[in-house]
Image (cartoon, rainbow, N blue to C red):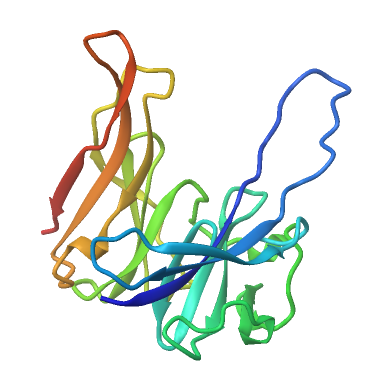
Length: 228
């Protein structure tokens, strides 16, 4: 099995502290390239472009991504807590995602080649959330699906196109939480573990539990959800 993919990774920290403390910078987002050539082996990773998206731009691809209709759709968090989306035309297996000329950005309900500022309120997709989640296409529903969470309360939203319009999210599952300082996190869906029909989905999350020695350890429940 061989494959390659590009991923955008970065972090933004919301700081709340004593008055007089100033945030001196906001991190940029870097573009990484992941190559998998042997089944079962860890893929190699390299950084293609450091600071691919600047600190005044959305980190497209850092929140979620989906491939459809000859494009890679890349989602990033907005200051308002919603998602914004860009798309890059696929010129290879997963395209030349380091080529800015291949990108379009969804702004005010239309695609444009002009990169918007992260403060542009018209880039936010209604009914979306920048909490950790997964976006994939469901043949069963002929819709795009977002599955995300707060804690282990899994939410679902659907849309006829990658850019929307997205339905209001509804809860469909609530999982167990741990007892540590960070009881639950990293809730995601795994469409790649299914047969592709859309009849079911696997979801997982991480919980912190205390072992017999009194130490915090991690467990990752994996749950199959069958849709009616």
